[in-house]
Length: 196
Image (cartoon, rainbow, N blue to C red):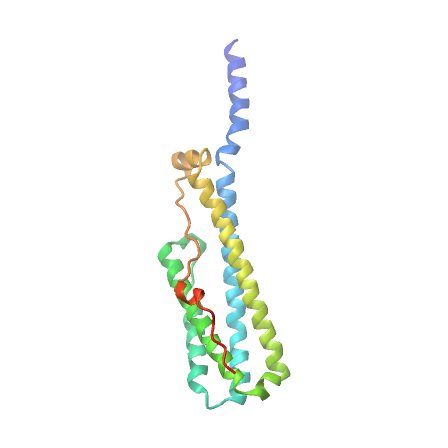
């Protein structure tokens, strides 16, 4: 074999093996992670946009429940101030974001207990429509988080499992991305108490 044949075979070999070694797959997976994270943020934004409407409707019926309503407003403000850009996804930033969102979820739960005390409010058409939207938003958040978790799993596999991890360690040097974690796992293990 002459040098031309060896060079041609080498080029063909590289063309067939490099795409499978992470040259395209790792950046593609990183784009998936960023898109999935943007969708998570989008759904949390939708929830925070609906909250003022919910608070205003409840205020009309339960004006003396100011403490609960104020807690929701403050939790919403804190949650909307805590932003994490896709390029800044670290365990610490994810923890801060999760804490802020968990605080908002807890405040909304307390607000729903207030609603149970006011049967007229539960029957109000505006409130029912808004409650349906909030329930739908919570479902969308769950779906968006699940997609993010799956995209993180795919990305982390590419940067840690050979052969793509070899390419990553030599050329790209991406670190694993953090997954969603629960702030208080004990709350998830306990069934919520519902009082009538």
